[in-house]
Length: 121
Image (cartoon, rainbow, N blue to C red; front, side, top):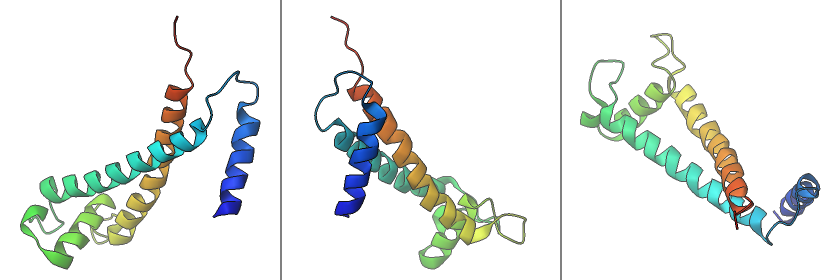
């Protein structure tokens, strides 16, 4: 983990060296903000689907319980069941997994831009 942090710090320093004065620790703060945003969005997205989604059988996902609810939610996120032409549960797991990473990156970049913006005097 330490090595990954050092590589991130080096790349970050190289990418912002010509950007003017940057507050100390802004990179770490942006990473934390991105991680928080991605975790919240992934959990919220799955919860939203569970409440308003419809399973491939036509049943409201909110009325399902346990493994059936989990499978139906993941299949919905994956574009529907494999039989219906979607990617099924595997696709839903992929969407949640990579969606979290994408949101982490977007959230981190947004937080970085916000924290390093030029303030009008």
